[in-house]
Image (cartoon, rainbow, N blue to C red):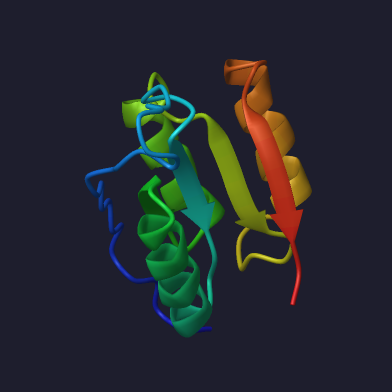
Length: 109
């Protein structure tokens, strides 16, 4: 098992997705959970380029810690299904018990 990377909370500045249309801070902030570093970075860069704020985590434990600190601004959980410490579906259910309106997308590669 690889040693987990430290939590990387990167909040980028956002810009309107459509000129003149601002999205709310909560809708524009994504918690990205992916254990593969290269995949996480590519997804991060793509989402930032599209105008979203992104918080990154490489494990479910890191994601829970980030979510506890930033849940007021997180509007979407984007998580890998297979994580080293918990599956993405269980993580999504756990975070949705804390914040029922949290949207979630589970991905697998």
